[in-house]
Amino acid sequence: MARCRSCSAPLSVNSSHCRYCGVRNDMDLQGQHEYSVQGVNSGRMCPHCEIALETIQLQLEQPLSIERCTDCFGLFFDLGELEFLLEYSVTDLGSINQVYLNNINTDFYSIRQAVKYIKCPVCQAFMRRTNFARKSGVIVDSCPYHGLWLDNGELQHLMEWKRVGGQLLHEQVQRQEKASRRAEGKHNFESMMQRPDKQETIGLESDLLDVLAFVVRKIF
Image 1 (cartoon, rainbow, N blue to C red):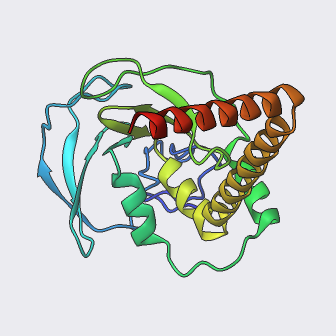
Image 2: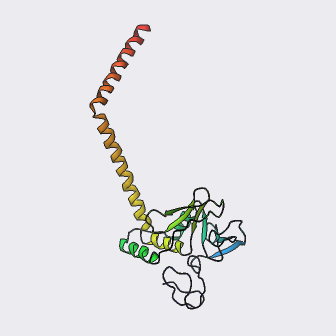
């Protein structure tokens, strides 16, 4: 259970506000990843608070710079950066705990929030809402040209989701769907080849090739 960084009281599910002291908590980075502030004004705006995002550098084997709101603690990742962070932070996975996965998503959505479309911190175009990896339970706001936004607590959810096999399950489903599409394509091709009209067309094409070959031999 997460605890308030100020008074150590337990935090309610889906809430970064402490009901005892009123402090807003950073659910994703506080006490989990070491980082340093690289710039207080990145030139990018928080889509919720409409203030400049600060640039922070996560102290990984390969330093990773991302943008962060100092008020709501939302995070903005350039394209590919979130996947890199998840790959670095959660490794050595070998099993899928479906029960735990279901519990994570149930807890995360115990408090429903209204659907809200927000603007990209870079280009200010409205971003697309998608379920990360389709079944992670985290609806991310993404810009196809610049990156994606995570609200406070969603990175923690994704790490927990991957830790109990969510990413493995996603990759497994992708392989099954790919195999299904190949099988369906093969079936459709075989069905087309077995159609009488298709066989007649193939026969005509063969006859035409024989005639052309005969004409070429006569000419040369």
